[in-house]
Amino acid sequence: MLQIPCAFCGLRDEIEFVCRGEVAARPADPMTTSDQDWAAYLYERDNPRGWLREYWLHVHGCAQLTLVRRNSLTNEVAT
Amino acid sequence: MTRPKIPFSKRFSAAALLGAGLRGQQHWPRMWRTPSLKKAYQVILIGGGGHGLATAYHLARDHGIRDIAVIEKGWIGGGNTGRNTTVVRSNYYYPGSARFYQRSVELFGKLSDELNYNVMFSQRGILTLAFSPYEYHQMARHVNAMQLNGIDARLLSVAEVRERLPLCDLSPGARFACVGGYEHPPGGTARHDAVAWGYARAADAFGVDIIQRCEVLGLTLREGRCIGVETGNGTISAERIGIAVAGSSTLVAGMAGVHLPVRSQTLQAFVSEPLKPVLDTCVMSGTHHTYVSQSDKGELVIGGDSDSYTSYAQRGSFHAIERTTVGLLEIFPTLSRVRLMRQWGGTVDITPDRSPIIDRTPVPGLYISTGWGTGGFKAIPSGGKSFAHLLARDVSDEYAADFTLGRFAAGTLIDEGAASGVAH
Image (cartoon, rainbow over all chains, first blue to last red; front, side, top):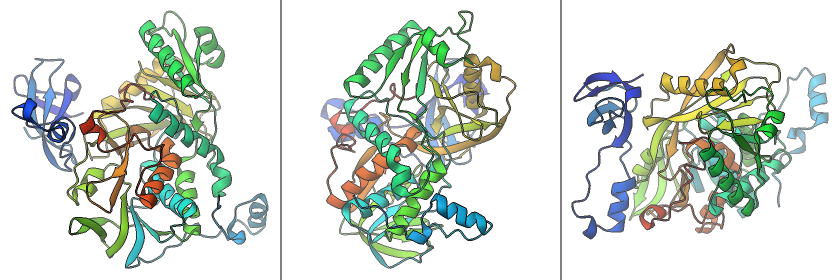
């Protein structure tokens, strides 16, 4: 099981979290963003084979989002 | 319809089996050639899994295109096609998916005869259980939709479930009391290796070059058009290039600068030690995130939910195994002493709406079939037929018409997440 470092609670088991996926920048003004760019923001991610930055929600803990660097190939988590 | 021209001396039959038996089963012919890579092909298919091979087969059979290379990084039957829970079904909700998967089930029915290869397709039915009134009402709605789409399905009462599943704990005292279910009689299982091998052998008989242990290192672009593939065995060019890889489709498409709405995740499956026949159908439960069938060898083949995060590790979390087996034991407490024998974790491509993508990419000459997620095996015949149509005619057939890459920007998603075999 992965050990996820919560910024608020410290190292906790993966089952306390929900993975919210890769970090993506929200377009500043949705009203002027094209459909293509908005769809890219909603659905397209780098999906890298290696290190990635993602949000984990500590749903069974402090209920805060925390930023985690994790390697998708080796399952290493940067602490 | 042209059948693959497998030479008479290589055809499998009762007479061939008897003849080989008299010679100690020593002289079976090789099922496909090991050709060396040519410099150019009409079509290159990246990925020698079920979808790549079925696409090559249908290009040759339906469209007369036989100058094809299927290039595979590993070996035939060594990827997700050869490691899955082998369930074939068409119990989908939306009309676009329903007709696509229904065609797949129908093609599976004829496959052994067509390929001259026994894929052991067994339409033993699929029984999905409901454990709350809410789930049962959703199920009724789902069954109604399926019936309107012409797919065989029927709602069952608890008494009917009990009749079909004597092994199942249906007592009111169970942790989750079963309130009913539905059956999907055309569903069943097929032998996964045989599907890969059968398609490979039939495609090879049409003259398709199957190149194993050949990794794609890059895609060659000229003036914005994809004109070839750089591989570990040299550079090859082609008029059209199809990507049919599982797990790594974003990486391969990324070589041409194409972004896909696809996430690679781990899906696990496991088999128990072999048992005497205890289960003659496939049983699924959304509440318990588990499904099970019994293979011809007697092993219980068990699957569940995918792991929740992006992963190429081909190794899943233990808690996913625990959750799946706990769910299984809630339904079948009597299996508590059964030992698991093997476990597998594979990388699958999951789209936001859990429906596949069979479409042109923004790069001319480059086509893609991806997003098969947790249920690509059942789609192999239909996916291959549709992708072959797209590669041959440059336009999708009616079955794949909804599975476009542009649906995410257009907002026309085919959200089959809730309609999947287990809730995701």
